Length: 490
Image (cartoon, rainbow, N blue to C red; front, side, top):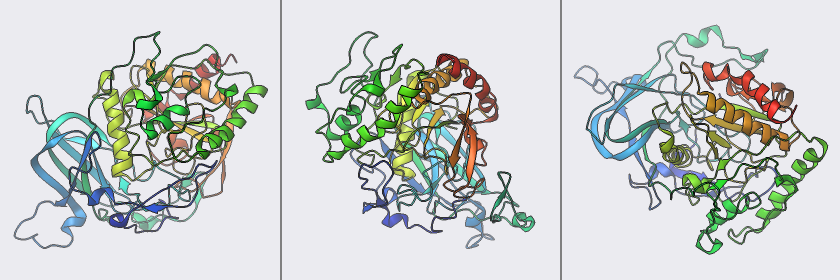
């Protein structure tokens, strides 16, 4: 699935990126300890992750010692654990595929009742950084399922079963965007990936309540940490330092604004790089006046992102030509009041469990239509994300929180996607109803270097063989494109 990566990456010796700020991700890295090498209480940061190795299931006198048992089924029986709210499964090799099913059941902290078995989306390699980017080639990466939000829980049981007749290899090359699989590729059961671990994520405490509408939320720069000031500073034109919300505006003047340099991070070049990244935005806006009104956006400060766990610095692409829409596959059992916790859980899972440099998506949208800043670097800037493997360059990723394979996305969420894309694509002179050409960075649908034409508002499945963003949400993208164009005044 990710052929260009080495087939085995040693997680215990994982390396972390020390990314200088440039228009494209650099290729240098410095070492840091692997997350799964730490004890269950991994650090002193808000929130925590319990990482539990899975074991072969169904052991008996006959099967004990059977080397094939671990390849067919692994898991853990019911057990007490420290409180957590989000679960996922990771494994050693990010290039390995998990062909099978992952199911968990959890015990609610409030009443001690065990849930029914819930499916965890395996989503092998379909999200993440492009293979040859610095982030994609980092030694921190692991294979991972989608995270599942289960709410406050203190007990867990899990089973992972290999799929019989699953593909054990793929043919090289594609035809008309569809991966060709050799006929013999489905004649055997692919073993489960090595190093399977259950990740139980506690998102930590809720951030301070957002200010009432019409008030200016500002924390003096002196009370912000270096990383917080850096993440806030790149949004300092539309909102003051420490703001929890970037207010809606009928007309956006971000493109004409200077980037405020911050003294927060040691890399003074960060501000200069952000300035450079904003230049194409200003040029496009001057040529194309179709910019939708800026929507209200809850900042990373607003949902409580711990800026110390991400990689320092910001990485930009050249422009934004297209928006890929996703569903988070975290389930629909959340309230809009819980979304800050859901986002902190996903963020910690992306960074601490999956080994990414930051939150994968550029933006998130909840079922109530609220829009959230995702990956750090500035909401108006072309931040390089890790959302659509092979097509992160010159694109943005928007995750609608929930699972929409068989559930219809709320109208408020679809409207929020339209409002967000009308503004962000408009900053780059892009028509939401048009098409754009992107160059593949490598994936299971398109070879590296292939030029592919997409709707400017596309679904994740358009660039990768995946169910994401779920059939029900994918079917709403036409509505989003039309609405987005209207918000731009087209």
